[in-house]
Length: 197
Image (cartoon, rainbow, N blue to C red; front, top):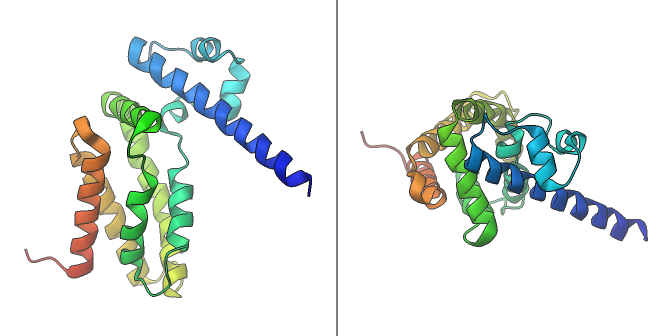
C-alpha cells in the first residue's frame, strides 16, 4: 500500500523534470534557433546534466516533439462507449486531449511554430504519423473485433491518418490547435457520413 504513493510521486517528479527540460529547450530554440542551440546549453538552462537531458529526450527532435497525447488519446478511445463506431469514438476522443488555454497551450503553440520552421522536425512529425498507423489499426481492430490486418480496418485507419495529416498541414499556424481540431473533426465527419464529390 505504501508503494502506490511513492510510485506516483516518482512519476510526477519525472514528468515535472521532463516538462521543465522541454520548456527550456523550446524557449532556447525559439530565441537562438534550433540548429544553434546545443544540448549543453539546454542542460545549463534547466540546471541538469546533459546526460539527464538525454535520459528524458534521446534525440534533439524529441525535445520539441515529445508529448503524451498519443497515450492519453488511445486510453480515451478505449474508454468510449462500446456502442460507438470507431469513427464516432475517435471524434469523441480527439478534442478532449488538447489544452484549451494556459501554459500547456502556449508550449504547444511554440512547439508547432518550431515544427513548421525546422525541416528536420517537420519530416519527423510526418514520419510519426506512419508509426501511429499501426497502433491505431490495433485499436480500431480491437473495437471492431477484427484482426489488425483486416482490409476494412486498414482502409479506415489509413483514411483517419490521411485526414489527420491533411488537417495538420493545412491548419493555420496562428491558432493551430483549434484549426487542426476543426479540420480533423470535419474530415472524420465526412468519413462517417460519406463524400459527395
